[in-house]
Image (cartoon, rainbow, N blue to C red; front, side):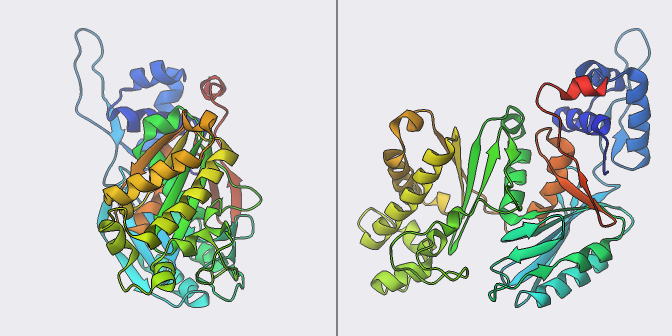
Length: 392
């Protein structure tokens, strides 16, 4: 196990407040002061926390605040995606350490070999854990990538060589859309801590993934993966999807679809940026996208829909989409629905992969499955309201 429940409670408080004394941690978590001292000593020894300058507050024993150590240890993010693999070091405060390294691949076994080579090159004694992501369906127990756009043939890929290369360094494996939700949980930690049901949708050119957070925790189903909103099929002609079907929503949200419909040469981003309501093909695409998104909201009854996309910078395009989603959502749900735009323009998949480990460390409701030395470990948090009681 990467951290025990007491250590995670301490880390959450320190991450939230920046600098916290041992006595304040005792007051805020309910953990016995002696236990706070023991757990803090271990975290200091592992290079996860560090002591700050002593604070003298009136009479009594001076306080020595603790904070997250930004330099001693790091998390490694390893992201497999369509056409490439990226690796990068991320500090325990969430900042990139140097520039991520990217290599192009043809997917499948070639991507696996590249991922193993990059991991071996960048893994060192200061690596606390590895966040590993890949698109598609993943079986966490067997480390199999069951179904992925990185493998157009549909053949499963065994990720075990990555685990062999990591040795005893813990690995958190998830679908890339789930990792994006972990990134959201970190950047919106107050909202994530309060729970609630959130549907996070990643819109891109030829890519549409989604993750459902139920009471702040990722919904997995039988295997980990996106909620596959992108493979919602509509009865329209669209470019054939890698899944073998026609009419998938993520292929409708693409430059290829626009070109197929009217022969235009501009990209989806270009046409979305120039959108003024008169582009009939974009209007058609927006109607289909809104149909899929509103059906998802009607089915899941979420209180918040987050659209994560570079396209959110296209104001008229985004306004038309959100207006249509609201129009197609059941009225009883729509009036309670909050739609947020998340301009996730960072082009660092490795940083998002590393968020799997950081969300596990700092967000109480984030459930992460860690594999250490080939052994799968369940590290789900206690139900809300019970965590502190378990720590006494």
